[in-house]
Amino acid sequence: MVDSRLPNFRSLTPAQRVEHLARITDLSEDEVALITQPGALSVERANGMVENVIGTFELPLGVGGNFQVNGRDVLVPMVVEEPSVVAAASYMAKLARDCGGFQTSSTGPLMRAQVQVLGITDPYGARLALLKHRDEILALANSRDKVLIGLGGGCRDIEVHVFPDTARGPMIVMHLIVDVRDAMGANTVNTMAESVSPLVEKLTAGTVRLRILSNLADLRLSRARVRLTPAVLRTPERSGEEIIEGVLDAYTFAAIDPYRAATHNKGIMNGIDPVIVATGNDWRAVEAGAHAYACRSGRYTSLTTWEKDTQGALVGTIEMPMPVGLVGGATKTHPLAQLSLKIMGVQSAQELGEVAVAVGLAQNLGALRALATEGIQRGHMALHARNIALVAGATGDEIDAVAKRMAAEHDVRTDRALALLEELRRQ
Image (cartoon, rainbow, N blue to C red):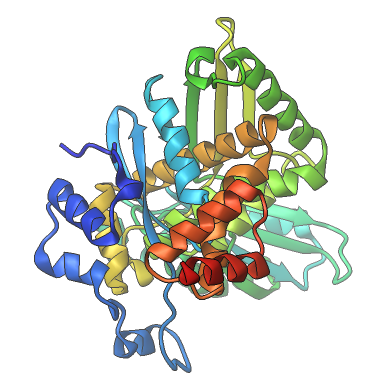
């Protein structure tokens, strides 16, 4: 049984952290080597993944700790370059753990493929013609992926959207609704859209143009909920009740103002994107769907909600599209993506999506709590100071020494780091 608590993890060396992780997740020597040695993604393998390869590019791989999702402890691999993200998410997960952790759920893995039809004069009549032949269209779409059908997936339904007056004349767009199981599903739904296009043209007497998936995966939603008591949230400087009121004020700002909502949601994605990248999934698709979903009411707003229940506890929720997979693409070809999934212990794409939104909710709470108390810079700049120390040329123990001095002085600048490093070396 994995224990997601990582006591004193920050004070360990990277080698000691890997040793601890290997012990609790049963990693083999080869898997440990993938993490600790450069070149997990060889140039040869990278050359087969994308075009014009000249090398590979590394980012830090950290582990979010303390997460408990639906009663199960989860270690969360996170690939991110921004300081304080992993620390903030892990600390909020620690607070949530004392109140029962995160509760999550999700819809089925349904994706949309869009088939655009132009050159028609009777768009409403064309719509009904397609709906009348729904079963024929579904059968043709499903004939292209017997493996998916065998796994219990496949094209489930169609929708037809009418745009009677566009700059290009009347237009209809047919959506294929496809259960893609544990795949992200882009290739599957695109292939199905291509395969039904001749039949669509025959039934509508129109011309099919675009045949492609939609990244607004509003039928493939992941949800998370967390409840934190005032006792858990209190600090030596502030009561839990005061912090809750501050969080609610900060959330309301994001709910009503798109300028604040953009930064608020970016903070949510600070938690989600590192999980998506670590598992080899398409973080651009997740980002696109998230921000489009944030506009579904007609204006851009927060992806999360924060409320106070009748007992005075803070309750946070998130619901958003989560088009992720366990099979296909870089998830299968990148060795560290496979290892990340093993460390997480997820068994389905839906479970992966649920963990990701729980991390996003934790990250959002961390940002709101900081904004409502000491301000966002205090904790962030303390961690950012290590980056500045590195830029100044600090190595080994010098990094922490210089970073701690700058953080204590509230003066995190490269020239200050250079001066402190020179002083340290003179001593």
